[in-house]
Image 1 (cartoon, rainbow, N blue to C red):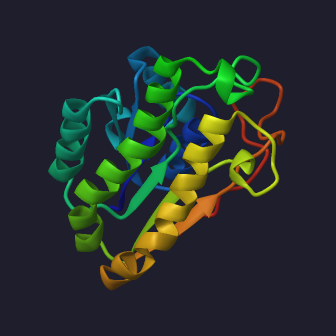
Image 2 (cartoon, rainbow, N blue to C red):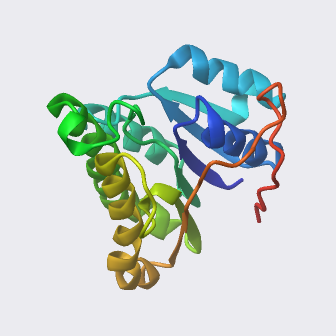
Length: 203
């Protein structure tokens, strides 16, 4: 059985990925800060609870990142890493840098950039052992050149996208393929917010 780590698994694209991977027979490690929402994610998949391991973790905290990596290592080789977690931003309050509180800047950078770098660093041995493996990083259309959006969040997502480019030689040498998704304002769910309207291709 193939193993995949999915962050930001308590809602949105992360929850949809947990659903799709688990229904296709993957063993999923699902993480987010909210344990209750993770339980709800597992319920919505409709698959055996044994195929989805829940790990509540604050990715702004080094010890939680370490614990998450340890949980992944106990499952053996890692074949996929889908990183949907990011620092939260209020598009209205944080629309301009001058109005973005310092603590919000720290929180966005800690989760969006720092945790991405630390997770990639610590997961590479597991992903290399499971090669050929894949990582998918969620950026944002706000990270694209010319897109308007909260500047700190947008810069963080742009960094995530560029990180893959900066690491491509290292990743390929370890048998790890990488993709970046620039998610945007699209209707990804039906009205119940439980069934994705798009199809994720899982090999």
